[in-house]
Each structure stands twice: as C-alpha cells, then as structure tokens.
Image (cartoon, rainbow, N blue to C red; front, side):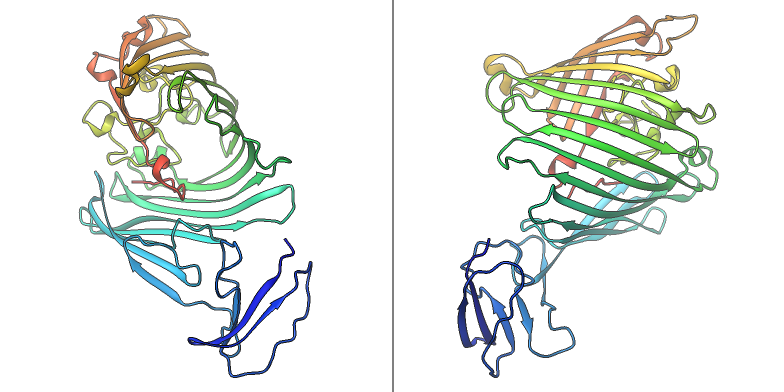
Length: 433
C-alpha cells in the first residue's frame, strides 16, 4: 500500500525533526535535514497499522546501525515491537532413560509474527548425568503479491536418552510453502512441505547396539478447509529411505451437528509400500496407532518411549496414525504392505455432548490376517474415548473382532491413551522426550 510515511530524527527522548512523505511505489531517495539526532525512525508514534517494526529504524553511527536492543524477560510478556524479545522460563521434564530433567526454555515470543522465530529447551538430566533437549529455528518469508503467501524454512534438533546407555538424536530441516488464494477470505488453504530428516537407527537402539544415523526424505501436500461448519483436510504423503519407499493419503472430515465442536468426525487412511525392507518391518504401515518404541522419527512427547505395552501406565501411550486401531496388535500382527482404514467418532446427542465422552468405531482392511487363528484381513473395534480433546484422550475398546481378541490379550491391555501438545503449541514444535 503506497501510503504516506511519517519519518523522524530522534536522540533519546528528543525529536529533532518530523516529516511526512507522500506514498510511493518501489524505491525513492528522501532528503533529510542535518542534525545531532542519533537515529532515523519510520512511524515513531505507531500511526501506521504494521506488525513488524524492527526494520523501521536506522542509527546514524555505530558498527551495527540497523541493530535493535534486546529485551530479556522472565516468563511471558507482551512483545515490544521495537526490541528483540528474549523470553526465558524454568522448565522441567522426565523420561525413563534421562530421569528428572531441569532446564530453561528460551524463545522470542509468539504473539507478534516475526521473520525469525526460535525455541530452545536445554536440560540437564539427573538420571544419567547428561545433557538433553530440543530446539527449533524458523525463518518466515512473506512475498508481496505472489502465488506464495508464506514460505517457512526450519531447522529442528533433539537429543534424549535411549536404552543401552546412549542418546538418540534427531535433525530435521525443510521448507513449508503456503499458497495464496485468489479470494483471501476463502476458507480453503493448501500447502506443500519437503523435509530432510536424519535420526538415530531405532532398530539398532532396540537391539542395544550403537545407533548410526539414518536419512529420510519426506514430501507432503495438505489441502484443508478451516471453517466452523463441516471442516475437512486432505493430506498426501511420500516418504523415501535407504531401504523403503511409501506413499499414503489421509482424509479428515467433520459433519457438523450444531455449534463448533459437535459432530461426526470421519478419518480415512490408505497407504501402500513401493519398496520395503523385510528385516526392519516397522517402516511399513502399522495397523494400530504407534507407540513410542515404533516411532522411528521419534515424534511426540513420550515419558517412557521405549517401554513395551502394557508393562506400565506410560507404555499405553500412542499416536493415532496410519491404521489407527487402538488395540495394540502391531507386535503380533506385524506391519502391512498396504492397508485401508476408516475411523468414526461422534459427540453424544443433546445436552449429553457436554460430557467429555465420545463413541468411536475403527475399521481396518490390510494385506494379511493371522494364520491358523483368524485368517481374516478385516478388523474392527468400537468403544468410548474420554478426556480433553486433542490434548489427553483415553481410548477404551469395548467390542473387537475375533482376530483382534485372539492376539490383544485381556480387555485391560487394550486401553490406551493419546497425549499431544501440538494443539497448544503455537510454534508447532514436535516435542521429543
């Protein structure tokens, strides 16, 4: 927008001159009066509606004329638009391998969008007297009047304890490109993501061997409609590793009944292996939601990542993905070269919707059943989930197909839960623990 500019010469609290400049496009030389002022500031009184103001001033002398002061603040505060914000706060964590962890979280604020954003969480682990932690830095590019609305280049890293008196490591770098709609008020958005990921070999960690780093490449295309009524999303993914290639499609749709949070949630997933490794089966598709010990990218916050379900409470934690069954059948059933799954979850009718309870139904079809027991590629389960939606949810399968019942053990062993901080994490850090 070629709007008028307010420019001033300032030294401390003293204003040496003020001038309004007519709006223009492109670049233009502006003559300013001489004086003893320390810096030149655009819009010093914040008249213009602008979010990012850290490039609105330049000093007349010094080694770093464009540098802005740093404002350090304990805990959380509002961002100062004319200073670099450095927020810090104590942080605690715990995991089976690291024990109790004490550290500090550093970030530069979430309220005002910035070209450069970062979060760093270093910890000292008292259980193994080692360092642990995670961090992310992202650079946001917002082209003007371009088909690309926002491009984000990011780098993530993490280190936490693993069995065999070692640490697992994760390094992820990539770009996310959000495309612009012709109509800015249209609820339909789409973006393309490409990532390079290097992580410790999970198969070697489970064998208590010294883990080498494995490399992977991911591509994803996401189309989503962010609306209150009947929102939906479509995610197409491709993953390439040294020993495997896989592709999948996931569709999510909410058939709204009334209000924002009431409706029937429908999830459909289809995936197929283009190349596979028989020696390391968990690269293929899982029928059940993956536990921490099956996450070869080390996603999520798992206090007891490498435990075997149902040994303890934390071993029941999972991430709903791929086949999406709640019953833990991956170890007995194995992993699939192809699968189709359908999940239905609904709120309770009428005033009962206020209770944090939702019935669910999961249906799965894959490339193998269970030889000599219930040789059927068709699986189903139905039950209830309770909790805080999208943060902490407990899944209780009450009715399961015979092939699930034959391998999943008792009713209690099928109860699992999901804990995800992504819904409250504005910076979208994939926490690791």
